[in-house]
Figure 1: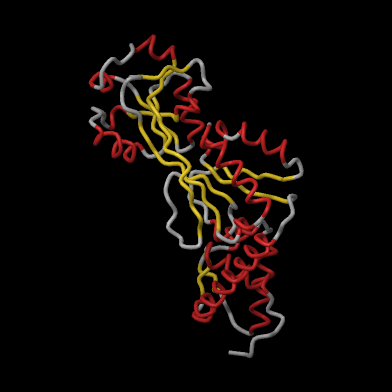
Figure 2: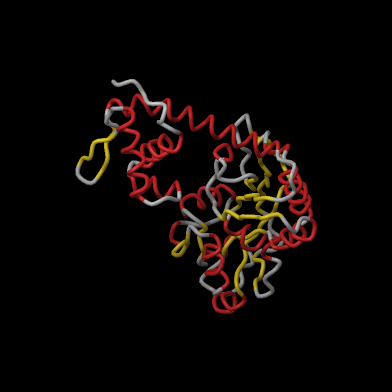
Length: 296
């Protein structure tokens, strides 16, 4: 192997790392927000500067060479170091300007944050906020987000997590659905109704059936992995669905089904990185968001 060149800079190594993790140049380009030819040129330049072949093309896919596999571990270490530098720089920043990314579920992002964003705009009008609407658990360590609203406590030791509250939810249905199908009066009545699944119906059944609800796969004939779309199907009368009580209260046309039944409960966690928590702008957003979620 030739002696590595000093010109093998981080941009080229990052392109190699993204390609290795994505498995293709096109996937790496999407992850990096670049064009595929640009990523390809950076990988080719790194190969030329190092004097080694990192990838071999097998059909339409890329396969790492032995040299590429050996280099990958070192590239990942560089990526982690670059991420730590970015985190530290953000933590040291005391400016109230700049960007703060918040990740939350699509339902929370769409229906649950408008009031908070109005408050924040009044107190810090120069802040730029990006909402990452996703049900995925975003990796704060890699700066996909600065603050996360989650329903599971994160396990990473470098993260700060604060339990904001225990939220409640119930079954809801549209008035026209209940007019057509009748209003359930008991748990047993639920077995005769259609339900909308939020995500995988088997996972929903795995949660609901142990609670004593007489439901089966036949009750879930419509669903969507996007929570906003699933809630729209409930609103349009396709069936009964579960919704957070605070969000459902904003829809006058929706009726709580079995209102006296015990609520579904789930925790609301606010999470950020330890070093980001020292940033003035992120601390401001964190504190306002914590107060808002606790009293919403």
